[in-house]
Length: 372
Ligand SMILES: *[C@@H]1O[C@H](CO)[C@@H](O)[C@H](O)[C@H]1NC(C)=O
Ligand SMILES: *[C@@H]1O[C@H](CO)[C@@H](O)[C@H](O)[C@H]1NC(C)=O
Ligand SMILES: *[C@@H]1O[C@H](CO)[C@@H](O)[C@H](O)[C@H]1NC(C)=O
Image (tube, rainbow, N blue to C red; front, top):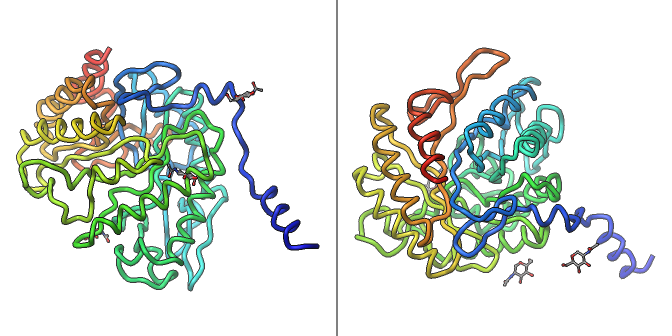
């Protein structure tokens, strides 16, 4: 066979499924500085569940998704990665396994089929998912799980090493291909809290450009975002506004295939006060307004349980108040619920807001009412 013909055949075989025009109309999108979900443009609320794709019982996933639907939440951010260097027991979920110099994607019953259940349940319950592809931190593997397989020893090297990026893009493609036509995908997200401490900001900007362009080449319909904490922008010069974590927030948001901006807020971890939050929100909203892209306040939390309701509801109010000047939605960290089949509560990391609790009434029921 002539090489040219071979190439075109390869192209046909690897092409991803496309979406029909009816489904395309119900794909979530940016509408100016707001989000349009199922045809409705307004401010949206939601939450985070890193663990929902690691549950092993479909009914448990459905119960939790139905609680979100009942509550009026629309957006749920989940971990689309679970990277290991040692395969766990057969009942334990993992998505990718590194051994020697190779990466193997687990598409089995304790692999990506668990994420399939999350996507299917989200479709059924009208929930839209942000799915991310790798962690900066070592929870559930992270970039560090790739290190020995791709021959690097830091996140800074990982962003720039061809072999690491080929493995990462291969994983991205495996996940995007599975849900390419799903109306339950809100956005693809490059990483959880990517940082490159002490690097030139061009390292991350180049990586975000390369990766978002790659995802766009696979999927012309769904939104794409970075998943970073929002560091590196004009402000009072305190740590969160500095560029030392390798993020130039406005430069990254300006990249053509990045659809909206993300930022997080953990005052105790960052050495600032709770009341710093309202200025942090408006500083990002201002950049979003300038760049005409939506801003998502994607994670926020305080550890002191007594502060959950009063402090976090204040941030929610500041965010909603900026809904016509850049803010498009907020997702608190993190969702808590009872796993029906075991009767156990999901992970309490000190930030967890349990379904049906008084904190839930404050931060979900009242917030959803306030948004309207
Ligand atoms: C789908 O939409 C595209 C772009 O708007 C249009 O060109 C095409 O004719 C549509 N296809 C059908 C089957 O309606
Ligand atoms: C996440 O990134 C920052 C900056 O590069 C780094 O300091 C930190 O150690 C990273 N986390 C892990 C687990 O590598
Ligand atoms: C977005 O990504 C696509 C696919 O890779 C690429 O062709 C396009 O040039 C990118 N957009 C811009 C404006 O750079």
